[in-house]
Length: 590
View 1: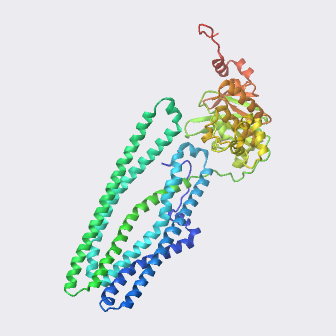
View 2: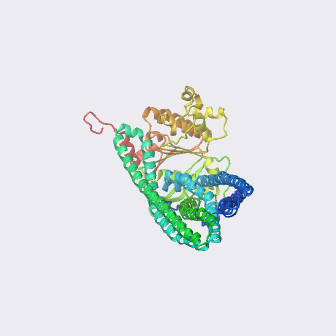
View 3: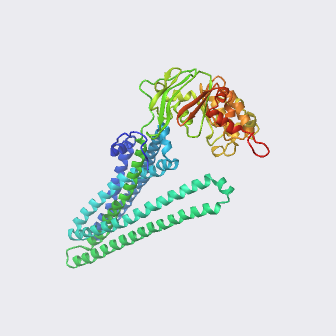
């Protein structure tokens, strides 16, 4: 369920849905015209049959029979052409509308705030992008068409039945409530079962995604049997509910078939009696019998259309729920910032995720341009949150952050983020080549720039040693790379971006000592000339920082250089000694 992360806009759902038809007005109009011609052609067969049986055949009118026969073939050719247009061009229209919605949704997702993704699973958003929009596109194409054709055929066929014999027409009409009841009951059963089966399909997908993503952990713990049992449980649930759905479908099909056949039998009996009494011609009875299906079939289609309508409307509502989420917007006075020196100032900054517990409380820090400041403290103290406020990943609630004396609220989001580089512990790499991942720091960069960035990050030699060099695929999320290689690749990306402000958020905490030293060299090169904010648990990585700030429970507890903080004998010294205490042979602290 989508939770609103901010105030939502209000939309007229129908008007919003109809707006996607506007680029396809001509195709839609032709689709409706084709549907009209298709329906009219469908009424021709019983009309011509009635004429032949009542007039041409009894009177031996061979010429007219041939002419009408050829005419009927021509009508069928026209109907086939209309059917082709409806199924081809109509479906293409629906697909284009789906593509437009998908494009709008993707564009909207790119503009949603960082906080939105804290609350929403990727799989759920992907389902809205694919499954939901497929249901919407099917409704967009088949909805108006089915509604038009079914309504026209029901009305036209009933009027035609009445022109043959209104009493027989009333008999057919009397079966309508039974058809509605059977369809309604079967549809409820099918909807419930199909809804459950869709849920089970979602569970299967979730289990599958989780198991495949964690296949290395599964193998490491030899838990393939456990994973299989979880999968089979969902698989069995899917089979159970799908079976119930097909049972309901079978009951519906059998019931409708029986009802239709009973209707035909009653009409045949009544029509036969009318013929015997001279109230109906044999040709009229034959034409009437042929026309019954023209009345009943669209009734069934119209009733079954409600399921498609329900799926489409539900899918569109789920689509609109995301589209109504408020996007990130620049302030009215926001401007681009060019070539900033990188001076940072936090002034009375406080922040809370839930509006109750403060993660940051009255933070005041000044970082001169080009200096290196470090944030240390216990996990959950607010260090990473503080860093995320700089590029406006989260909206400031109290206080202000300044860059070169300019409030970040007056700097455009794009411009601000172009001048802030981030290297995190959990490196995200895109599926693709080394070249593509490095160039993500500057998508228009030349090959020479990419290579220079890789050299500065100390990963050029490794890449050059690969069979395909910079065009080597790194695998999904860089699965083929070690932790150090991933980190250096992300550093190369930031080198290419060349930001004025650099944030290193636990950039080496997941690396072994040898790899950390190699990455530290690249980071040291990266920090030169940039205002740098380092979040670190390994205190050895920040000894040379210009100032170290101890953050605990959202507040600044201590600040100073490494030497000054050790001399104070406070929280920092306790942290430092806990990491670097030595033991004698008996295990006692030295």
